[in-house]
Image (cartoon, rainbow, N blue to C red; front, side, top):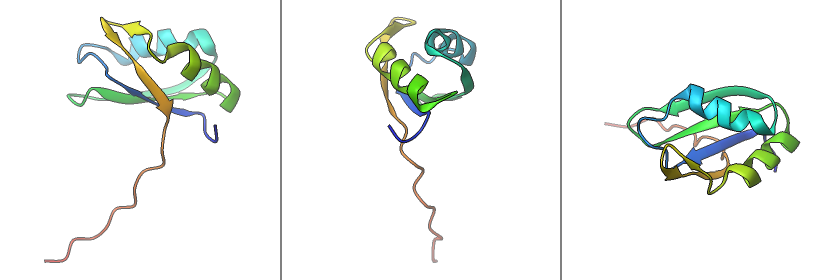
Length: 85
């Protein structure tokens, strides 16, 4: 892994940031949690790359709020392009 930020997909729409923080804290320091409401995914940033790798391995496929999570290394955001009208 190159980053300590993880993509977390297949979230139940009722899952809270607190719930994710608690689940991922088992694998190390959770720096930040962000859920995109109504989208079914979010991001968890761990304290180190090693902790992120452990969390990815431990949480991928683990059930949270009735749904098996999909956990992967987060990709960098795509650059935004200006629209021409």
